[in-house]
Amino acid sequence: MNYRDLGNTGLKVSEIGMGCEGFEEDHCRNTQVLFDLAEESGINYFDLYTSNPKVRASVGKALQGRRDKFIIQAHICSVWKDGQYKRSRQIDEVKASFEEMMTLLKTDHIDVGMIHYVDSMKDWETIVNGPVLAYVLELKKAGIIHHIGLSSHNPQVALEAVSSGHIEVLMFSVNPCYDLQPASEDVEDLWRDENYAAPLVNMDPERQQLYETCQRLGVGITVMKAFGGGDLLDASMSPAGKALTANQCLHYALTRPAVSTVLAGAHTAEQLRISLAYEDASEEEKDYAAALASFPNISWKGHCMYCSHCAPCPQAIDVASVTKYLNLAKAQGGVPETVREHYALLPHHAGECIQCGACETRCPFEVSIMENMKAAKEMFSY
Image (cartoon, rainbow, N blue to C red):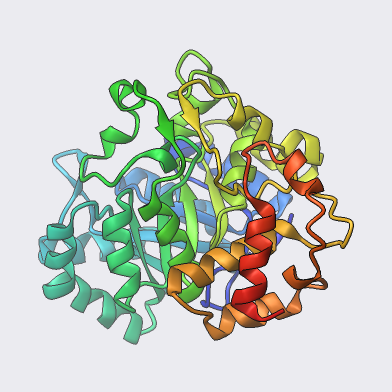
């Protein structure tokens, strides 16, 4: 298992994490099965958004004797009412639900306390100006949660939240279809068929700005919906009209700026093993470029996807990394110190480009790589 920094939190997390969708299967007996497999395979990070007391209790039971082997991302404002899940901003409900969760999990702390499901600017303003954020800050000060997170599907809201300075971890929906869609307060817009009917060209700029801002600020991204709820793995269901493999979906998400872990949804141990197979997959099995380039009605022409098809460079320049740092600097209108330091650590730099054009002949997305290398040389001065 490979491990990555979770932004600036100081936590090292497995790049394959675990969603909680399958915990409820088989009357919650599946929770134990999935945690056993997670421990065996090196998964140390999981998400718990559900407020179902039975699921929370099953997780608490599964964690007994091995709490220190797992980093918990658990949600605040997810409540259980009248026998079903509900998102709430009513502070009494929020507090009662969180306290119940702590009891059922049998733990004295949550590693990442995730403010749950914030998809509208009005909702974010309610949180940041009201009792919810104040409560979350109290929990952090008391050491009950160690880091503050937020989950969202809306890049505008997520960008506002991470720019506030309060959010250390962002849970966000990342996949090559959703990344084409503009911001919306209705999460279902991400998979409505009509939103993929007209030709779509390139990543939504607000989503790109969000990822690059998280990278710059040291906000770690934990990915949800990497498989689009499974739709991207089935050609008959995929918004793109073609299927991707699990390895391709995982690799796409893990090559976005600031992404630390993908929370792989799994209803069975076998489904989780499919995601775990990514760790031993070949570069060919992970490669998503050719598949994305062949999607009907969707084009990433001119947009670097960090797929590294441009390699090998005769000057041994890591073109994908240089381009990623160039985009981070462009988004800032200058070169932040952290970006400059990361660029400096590259063994070869844009200034070494001999403008041979070999990279451009291999790029599936017709990116003007030589122009990018010139721009990077100018931006970083070498």
